[in-house]
Image 1 (cartoon, rainbow over the protein chains, first blue to last red):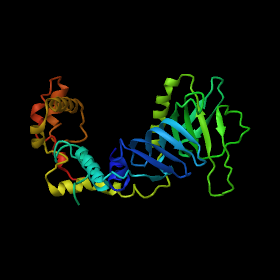
Image 2: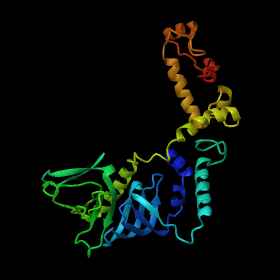
Image 3: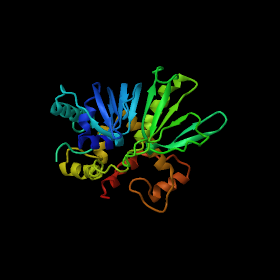
Image 4: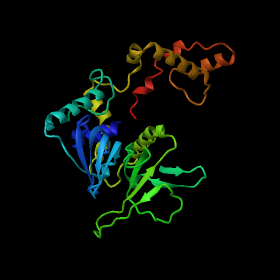
Length: 116
Length: 199
């Protein structure tokens, strides 16, 4: 949605969105941690993971096929060491701009101007 | 606006989406004997509540006052193939309930969007509307059909109170009442002049 693209463009959540397809660990507010493959991250930082190992704050481990964590409950997201943070952000921004200006500058969704 | 679980007997309960911290599909039978939808909720539930036979409430054991109460639910459907749909539905519903306390991201987006029109008119290269002559040359076949249909509708509506440019004149009204077909084409010129009016 337009609103989500705007939010993503203006916050670091865009970096998390670039982690799609990567395996990483998400630490939650209640000190449990979920490790898995990032399926998606939305502008509200809701994270969807697949093939998850959930370690609750007491240390008990469970395996879940899919997990959805609300953004509010995310404390940390581990960025894998081999991720180039700047390049990931730039690529995500390009993807947003492709949607926004699909078909050329004077066509496609006119959300707001390219540069201020 | 709430997650509800109902048994066949009609007994059930509801959870408010904002209280749900996370949800998951668990197919690990070594952890729990049935495939289920696991939901973690940020709230306390009384143990003696009879409406929640499938719920497992876990009270916080720590004496640490800062830790919030947590309750864990396992929803076991009779048909485990429903789990995907249940999970996805919950994801969508959660996305519809963004955190009201989160005040860093959404503030300025409204302002940016409403600048579009002003910026476009100022730049002049991206018109948000066409004057009649320009518009005609950009019409697709579908657009042309729509235009003709709308013009037909306009011609049909009899309005003597006001004189919309190009649509109705005293003369053409008389013609219409005579039962003669009004030829719309001649009155089309200038019909969209009002589109140029500044609002």
